[in-house]
Image (tube, rainbow, N blue to C red; front, side, top):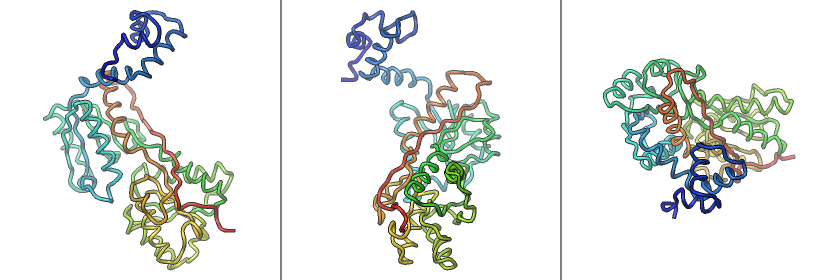
Length: 346
Protein backbone atom coordinates (compact mmCIF):
# COMPACT_ATOMS: atom_id res chain seq x y z
CA UNK A 1 0.00 0.00 0.00
CA UNK A 2 2.81 2.41 0.86
CA UNK A 3 4.40 1.89 -2.56
CA UNK A 4 1.29 3.29 -4.23
CA UNK A 5 1.13 6.44 -2.17
CA UNK A 6 2.00 9.58 -4.13
CA UNK A 7 1.38 13.29 -3.95
CA UNK A 8 -2.11 12.87 -5.42
CA UNK A 9 -3.14 10.49 -2.61
CA UNK A 10 -1.78 12.92 -0.01
CA UNK A 11 -3.78 15.78 -1.53
CA UNK A 12 -6.96 13.70 -1.60
CA UNK A 13 -6.50 12.58 2.01
CA UNK A 14 -5.91 16.18 3.14
CA UNK A 15 -8.82 17.51 1.10
CA UNK A 16 -6.74 19.97 -0.91
CA UNK A 17 -5.77 20.41 -4.55
CA UNK A 18 -2.68 18.72 -5.99
CA UNK A 19 -0.97 22.10 -6.45
CA UNK A 20 -1.64 23.08 -2.82
CA UNK A 21 -0.14 19.83 -1.56
CA UNK A 22 2.90 20.39 -3.78
CA UNK A 23 3.37 23.95 -2.49
CA UNK A 24 3.20 22.75 1.12
CA UNK A 25 5.72 19.93 0.70
CA UNK A 26 8.13 21.96 -1.42
CA UNK A 27 7.77 25.30 0.38
CA UNK A 28 7.10 27.14 -2.86
CA UNK A 29 4.17 29.32 -1.79
CA UNK A 30 2.67 30.78 1.42
CA UNK A 31 -0.06 28.47 2.72
CA UNK A 32 -2.23 28.91 5.80
CA UNK A 33 -1.04 27.12 8.94
CA UNK A 34 -4.22 25.01 9.14
CA UNK A 35 -3.88 23.73 5.56
CA UNK A 36 -0.15 23.17 5.95
CA UNK A 37 -0.65 21.07 9.08
CA UNK A 38 -3.39 19.07 7.38
CA UNK A 39 -1.19 18.24 4.37
CA UNK A 40 1.86 17.37 6.48
CA UNK A 41 -0.19 15.17 8.81
CA UNK A 42 -1.63 13.29 5.83
CA UNK A 43 1.80 12.89 4.23
CA UNK A 44 3.25 11.53 7.45
CA UNK A 45 0.30 9.25 8.20
CA UNK A 46 0.33 7.74 4.70
CA UNK A 47 4.10 7.16 4.77
CA UNK A 48 4.78 9.61 1.94
CA UNK A 49 7.37 11.62 3.89
CA UNK A 50 9.43 8.53 4.73
CA UNK A 51 9.37 7.34 1.09
CA UNK A 52 10.37 10.76 -0.13
CA UNK A 53 13.24 10.90 2.35
CA UNK A 54 14.44 7.44 1.30
CA UNK A 55 14.48 8.39 -2.37
CA UNK A 56 16.40 11.57 -1.60
CA UNK A 57 19.16 9.78 0.35
CA UNK A 58 19.87 6.84 -1.93
CA UNK A 59 21.98 8.83 -4.40
CA UNK A 60 23.68 11.01 -1.78
CA UNK A 61 25.69 8.30 -0.02
CA UNK A 62 27.00 5.53 -2.26
CA UNK A 63 30.02 4.00 -0.49
CA UNK A 64 31.27 4.15 3.10
CA UNK A 65 34.39 2.84 4.80
CA UNK A 66 33.64 1.05 8.06
CA UNK A 67 36.67 1.01 10.38
CA UNK A 68 36.63 -1.37 13.37
CA UNK A 69 39.20 -3.11 15.54
CA UNK A 70 39.89 -6.83 15.51
CA UNK A 71 38.59 -6.95 19.10
CA UNK A 72 35.16 -5.69 17.99
CA UNK A 73 35.00 -7.84 14.87
CA UNK A 74 34.34 -11.35 16.29
CA UNK A 75 30.66 -12.24 16.65
CA UNK A 76 30.39 -13.51 20.23
CA UNK A 77 28.39 -13.06 23.41
CA UNK A 78 30.98 -10.53 24.57
CA UNK A 79 30.44 -8.31 21.51
CA UNK A 80 26.64 -8.23 21.43
CA UNK A 81 26.50 -4.43 21.71
CA UNK A 82 28.98 -3.86 18.89
CA UNK A 83 27.42 -6.50 16.69
CA UNK A 84 23.93 -5.13 17.17
CA UNK A 85 25.22 -1.72 16.09
CA UNK A 86 26.99 -3.22 13.10
CA UNK A 87 23.92 -5.19 12.09
CA UNK A 88 21.75 -2.09 12.30
CA UNK A 89 24.24 -0.20 10.13
CA UNK A 90 24.39 -3.07 7.63
CA UNK A 91 20.61 -3.28 7.35
CA UNK A 92 20.28 0.46 6.80
CA UNK A 93 23.01 0.43 4.15
CA UNK A 94 21.30 -2.49 2.44
CA UNK A 95 17.99 -0.64 2.46
CA UNK A 96 19.59 2.45 0.92
CA UNK A 97 21.84 0.52 -1.49
CA UNK A 98 24.97 1.87 0.19
CA UNK A 99 28.14 -0.19 -0.28
CA UNK A 100 30.23 -0.93 2.82
CA UNK A 101 34.01 -1.36 2.59
CA UNK A 102 35.16 -2.94 5.87
CA UNK A 103 38.57 -2.28 7.40
CA UNK A 104 39.56 -4.32 10.46
CA UNK A 105 42.54 -2.84 12.29
CA UNK A 106 44.71 -5.22 14.32
CA UNK A 107 44.51 -4.98 18.12
CA UNK A 108 42.28 -2.55 19.95
CA UNK A 109 43.25 0.62 18.07
CA UNK A 110 42.39 1.77 14.58
CA UNK A 111 45.29 2.86 12.36
CA UNK A 112 44.39 6.34 11.01
CA UNK A 113 46.99 6.24 8.23
CA UNK A 114 45.52 3.02 6.86
CA UNK A 115 41.99 4.39 7.11
CA UNK A 116 42.96 7.46 5.10
CA UNK A 117 44.80 5.34 2.52
CA UNK A 118 41.85 3.02 1.92
CA UNK A 119 39.34 5.89 1.91
CA UNK A 120 41.31 7.63 -0.82
CA UNK A 121 41.94 4.48 -2.84
CA UNK A 122 38.26 3.47 -2.78
CA UNK A 123 36.99 7.03 -3.21
CA UNK A 124 34.43 6.57 -0.43
CA UNK A 125 31.77 9.15 0.39
CA UNK A 126 32.17 8.83 4.14
CA UNK A 127 33.93 7.01 6.98
CA UNK A 128 32.28 5.35 10.00
CA UNK A 129 34.59 4.52 12.92
CA UNK A 130 33.15 2.12 15.50
CA UNK A 131 33.92 2.59 19.22
CA UNK A 132 37.39 4.14 18.88
CA UNK A 133 37.31 7.79 19.98
CA UNK A 134 40.93 8.35 20.94
CA UNK A 135 41.93 12.02 20.53
CA UNK A 136 44.97 11.17 18.37
CA UNK A 137 42.82 9.12 15.99
CA UNK A 138 40.23 11.88 15.70
CA UNK A 139 42.87 14.55 15.07
CA UNK A 140 44.48 12.45 12.34
CA UNK A 141 41.22 11.64 10.55
CA UNK A 142 39.80 15.15 10.93
CA UNK A 143 42.57 16.44 8.64
CA UNK A 144 41.17 14.44 5.73
CA UNK A 145 38.47 15.89 3.50
CA UNK A 146 36.29 12.76 3.72
CA UNK A 147 33.22 13.15 5.99
CA UNK A 148 33.66 11.14 9.19
CA UNK A 149 31.40 10.03 12.02
CA UNK A 150 32.39 8.22 15.22
CA UNK A 151 29.80 5.55 16.01
CA UNK A 152 29.38 4.89 19.74
CA UNK A 153 31.99 7.41 20.79
CA UNK A 154 32.52 11.06 21.70
CA UNK A 155 34.80 13.87 20.59
CA UNK A 156 35.17 16.48 23.37
CA UNK A 157 37.20 18.64 20.96
CA UNK A 158 34.21 18.68 18.54
CA UNK A 159 36.35 18.19 15.44
CA UNK A 160 34.19 15.45 13.92
CA UNK A 161 30.58 14.25 14.01
CA UNK A 162 29.67 11.63 16.62
CA UNK A 163 26.62 9.55 17.50
CA UNK A 164 26.01 7.61 20.68
CA UNK A 165 23.38 6.82 23.27
CA UNK A 166 22.69 9.31 26.05
CA UNK A 167 24.88 7.42 28.49
CA UNK A 168 24.97 10.12 31.13
CA UNK A 169 21.23 10.71 31.34
CA UNK A 170 20.51 6.98 31.07
CA UNK A 171 22.72 6.24 34.07
CA UNK A 172 21.19 9.09 36.04
CA UNK A 173 17.72 7.77 35.26
CA UNK A 174 18.68 4.35 36.59
CA UNK A 175 20.24 5.69 39.80
CA UNK A 176 17.26 7.96 40.43
CA UNK A 177 14.98 4.92 40.16
CA UNK A 178 17.09 3.08 42.72
CA UNK A 179 16.94 6.11 45.01
CA UNK A 180 13.17 6.33 44.61
CA UNK A 181 13.01 2.75 45.90
CA UNK A 182 15.01 3.81 48.96
CA UNK A 183 18.59 2.89 48.04
CA UNK A 184 21.33 5.28 49.15
CA UNK A 185 24.48 3.14 49.29
CA UNK A 186 24.79 2.22 45.62
CA UNK A 187 27.99 0.51 44.49
CA UNK A 188 29.18 1.40 40.98
CA UNK A 189 30.99 -1.42 39.16
CA UNK A 190 32.83 -0.09 36.11
CA UNK A 191 36.11 -0.32 34.16
CA UNK A 192 38.54 2.03 32.46
CA UNK A 193 36.54 2.22 29.23
CA UNK A 194 36.01 4.83 26.56
CA UNK A 195 34.49 8.26 27.07
CA UNK A 196 31.01 6.75 26.78
CA UNK A 197 31.66 4.56 29.82
CA UNK A 198 32.93 7.50 31.83
CA UNK A 199 29.67 9.29 31.02
CA UNK A 200 27.84 6.53 32.88
CA UNK A 201 29.82 7.39 35.99
CA UNK A 202 28.94 11.05 35.42
CA UNK A 203 25.25 10.10 35.41
CA UNK A 204 25.75 8.14 38.64
CA UNK A 205 27.29 11.24 40.21
CA UNK A 206 24.60 13.54 38.79
CA UNK A 207 21.85 11.58 40.52
CA UNK A 208 23.49 11.97 43.93
CA UNK A 209 24.10 15.68 43.46
CA UNK A 210 20.54 16.27 42.19
CA UNK A 211 19.21 14.53 45.31
CA UNK A 212 21.31 16.78 47.55
CA UNK A 213 23.43 13.85 48.70
CA UNK A 214 27.18 13.59 49.00
CA UNK A 215 28.79 11.56 46.25
CA UNK A 216 30.05 8.28 47.78
CA UNK A 217 33.48 8.22 46.15
CA UNK A 218 34.38 5.09 48.10
CA UNK A 219 31.60 3.14 46.31
CA UNK A 220 33.29 2.87 42.91
CA UNK A 221 34.86 -0.50 42.07
CA UNK A 222 36.92 -0.93 38.89
CA UNK A 223 37.08 -4.27 37.11
CA UNK A 224 39.96 -5.13 34.77
CA UNK A 225 37.62 -5.01 31.77
CA UNK A 226 34.01 -5.34 30.67
CA UNK A 227 33.78 -9.13 30.38
CA UNK A 228 31.49 -11.09 32.75
CA UNK A 229 34.43 -13.01 34.22
CA UNK A 230 36.12 -9.70 35.08
CA UNK A 231 32.98 -8.37 36.74
CA UNK A 232 32.65 -11.60 38.70
CA UNK A 233 36.28 -11.38 39.82
CA UNK A 234 35.94 -7.76 40.98
CA UNK A 235 32.90 -8.54 43.16
CA UNK A 236 34.42 -11.78 44.45
CA UNK A 237 37.60 -9.96 45.51
CA UNK A 238 35.59 -7.24 47.23
CA UNK A 239 33.51 -9.83 49.08
CA UNK A 240 36.72 -11.51 50.30
CA UNK A 241 37.82 -8.33 52.08
CA UNK A 242 34.42 -6.75 52.77
CA UNK A 243 31.52 -9.24 53.05
CA UNK A 244 28.94 -6.42 53.27
CA UNK A 245 30.18 -4.75 50.05
CA UNK A 246 30.76 -1.37 51.69
CA UNK A 247 27.21 -1.45 53.01
CA UNK A 248 25.71 -1.36 49.52
CA UNK A 249 22.05 -2.20 49.04
CA UNK A 250 22.32 -1.97 45.24
CA UNK A 251 24.98 -2.34 42.54
CA UNK A 252 24.92 -0.30 39.34
CA UNK A 253 27.05 -1.94 36.65
CA UNK A 254 28.40 0.12 33.74
CA UNK A 255 27.58 -2.74 31.33
CA UNK A 256 25.32 -5.77 31.29
CA UNK A 257 28.37 -8.00 30.80
CA UNK A 258 29.70 -6.81 34.16
CA UNK A 259 26.26 -7.26 35.72
CA UNK A 260 26.07 -10.88 34.58
CA UNK A 261 29.39 -11.60 36.24
CA UNK A 262 28.24 -9.71 39.32
CA UNK A 263 25.10 -11.86 39.58
CA UNK A 264 27.23 -15.00 39.48
CA UNK A 265 29.60 -13.79 42.21
CA UNK A 266 26.68 -12.82 44.46
CA UNK A 267 24.97 -16.18 43.95
CA UNK A 268 28.17 -18.07 44.86
CA UNK A 269 28.44 -15.94 48.01
CA UNK A 270 24.87 -16.84 48.99
CA UNK A 271 23.46 -13.36 48.45
CA UNK A 272 19.98 -13.24 46.92
CA UNK A 273 19.09 -10.75 44.18
CA UNK A 274 17.04 -8.62 44.67
CA UNK A 275 16.09 -9.73 48.22
CA UNK A 276 19.53 -9.03 49.73
CA UNK A 277 20.91 -6.63 47.12
CA UNK A 278 19.67 -5.13 43.85
CA UNK A 279 21.64 -5.21 40.58
CA UNK A 280 21.15 -2.80 37.66
CA UNK A 281 22.95 -3.09 34.32
CA UNK A 282 23.41 -0.91 31.25
CA UNK A 283 23.05 -1.82 27.52
CA UNK A 284 20.10 -4.26 27.53
CA UNK A 285 21.75 -7.19 25.76
CA UNK A 286 19.64 -10.28 25.11
CA UNK A 287 21.49 -12.43 27.66
CA UNK A 288 20.22 -10.20 30.46
CA UNK A 289 16.63 -11.27 29.79
CA UNK A 290 17.54 -14.87 30.60
CA UNK A 291 19.79 -14.38 33.63
CA UNK A 292 18.68 -15.46 37.09
CA UNK A 293 16.95 -13.26 38.05
CA UNK A 294 16.25 -11.42 34.75
CA UNK A 295 18.42 -8.32 34.69
CA UNK A 296 16.98 -4.83 35.10
CA UNK A 297 18.98 -2.48 32.91
CA UNK A 298 19.21 0.73 30.90
CA UNK A 299 18.31 0.18 27.26
CA UNK A 300 20.91 1.59 24.86
CA UNK A 301 19.32 2.12 21.41
CA UNK A 302 22.17 0.35 19.61
CA UNK A 303 19.94 -0.81 16.76
CA UNK A 304 19.28 2.83 15.76
CA UNK A 305 22.81 4.24 16.03
CA UNK A 306 23.93 3.07 12.58
CA UNK A 307 21.10 4.83 10.76
CA UNK A 308 21.78 7.97 12.77
CA UNK A 309 25.46 7.84 11.77
CA UNK A 310 24.51 7.62 8.09
CA UNK A 311 22.20 10.58 8.58
CA UNK A 312 25.08 12.69 9.89
CA UNK A 313 27.25 11.73 6.92
CA UNK A 314 24.47 12.65 4.50
CA UNK A 315 23.92 16.02 6.13
CA UNK A 316 27.61 16.85 5.82
CA UNK A 317 27.72 15.76 2.18
CA UNK A 318 24.65 17.78 1.30
CA UNK A 319 25.91 20.88 3.14
CA UNK A 320 29.28 20.73 1.33
CA UNK A 321 30.58 23.31 3.79
CA UNK A 322 34.12 22.90 5.20
CA UNK A 323 33.22 25.34 8.01
CA UNK A 324 30.14 23.38 9.09
CA UNK A 325 30.53 22.76 12.86
CA UNK A 326 30.76 19.22 14.18
CA UNK A 327 27.51 17.67 15.34
CA UNK A 328 27.11 15.48 18.42
CA UNK A 329 23.99 13.31 18.26
CA UNK A 330 22.82 11.43 21.35
CA UNK A 331 19.89 9.01 21.27
CA UNK A 332 17.75 8.59 24.36
CA UNK A 333 18.09 5.62 26.72
CA UNK A 334 15.28 4.14 28.81
CA UNK A 335 14.91 2.08 31.97
CA UNK A 336 13.93 -1.59 31.57
CA UNK A 337 12.72 -3.19 34.79
CA UNK A 338 12.83 -6.95 35.22
CA UNK A 339 13.57 -8.98 38.33
CA UNK A 340 16.93 -7.85 39.72
CA UNK A 341 15.83 -4.60 41.39
CA UNK A 342 13.64 -4.12 44.47
CA UNK A 343 13.44 -1.80 47.50
CA UNK A 344 16.19 -2.38 50.08
CA UNK A 345 15.51 -4.56 53.09
CA UNK A 346 14.43 -2.78 56.24
